[in-house]
Length: 224
Image (cartoon, rainbow, N blue to C red; front, side):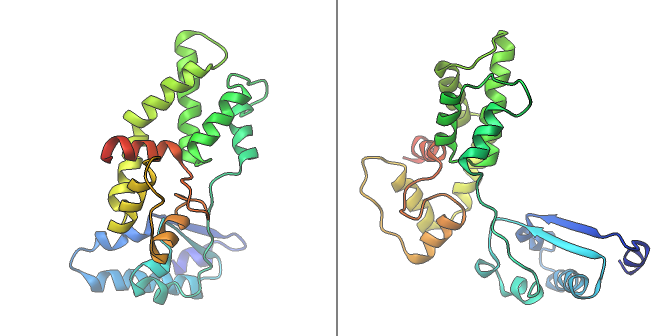
């Protein structure tokens, strides 16, 4: 890193580490090796003029072991939200000039179902276009959306994503997710820690309402 820092001259290098909270899994039973790596990260942040560090993950530092806040004390924490509805609409209806295969009413329903979660927006859009291509049609219909919505809940990448979200949640958060997935159930009570956990991950609104209906439909079908 010292050689790289010198060789960069006036340029800068950005080191990106995704899913940083999984790093301890790379050092099972070897805490000293993990501490050495974290020390290297801290030294890079503090001493390398041309090298920048970006760590990305789901959990904020204050939900994790103190090792993170101790070593990343100089990092600035940025919250990345879901897309806003206008950006989501442009992504679905006008990803390239002249594209109009997904009409605005269909796009609005996709936005409602996904809560503008980027992975799900991309999945709905690509599945709709793939369906049109396979049938040599040029405009999506409500029937297409219903078929795609069913497929998202029952197969493929979204199901794996949903399962990971649900299985990795703390017990109380899972109970709240399950209760919220039942439209006939009373509004569940939750601790401040669970509310903060769900808000930070964009699962609920500040009013406690589900933000990603398709995910909650999957929860009800799978665990209800």
